Amino acid sequence: MAKQHAIYDQNKVSGLIAHTGTADTAETQRIVAGVDGGLLITGLHGVVLTTAVAVANGTATALPATILSNRKSMVAYNNGTISIYLGGTGVTGAGNGIPVGTGDFSPAIDLGTAIIYGYGTSAGGTMIVMEVS
Image (cartoon, rainbow, N blue to C red; front, side, top):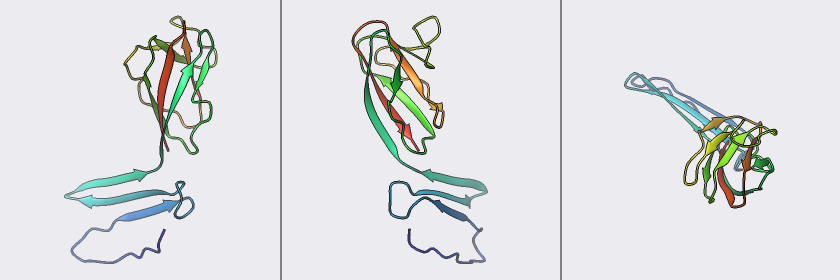
């Protein structure tokens, strides 16, 4: 990132800009905060990655197999022809998983580096996973 300098203006409220990561790379994250009309305005910029994952029949499948670096959250869309059940490594279907029907989205999950697994009870399972850092 280019050098940034604070400029004082008596007619404006001070703001905050913070950077982390390596300059000019996808790993750079920026947090911007300022005040507009008495409201605190913030923005967080990171990386968004989408991955298609075939969910195996009768096997807990990691969504996705390799997680995005510095991941904050994820959401998944069931693009397949069967319901997919979400849970931990021991998910085995309706008895202990959260169902995501065909054409439906999972809840948005703030999970960091934890791994969510999908389980299909027959062939035809595909999840499109969107991760955000």
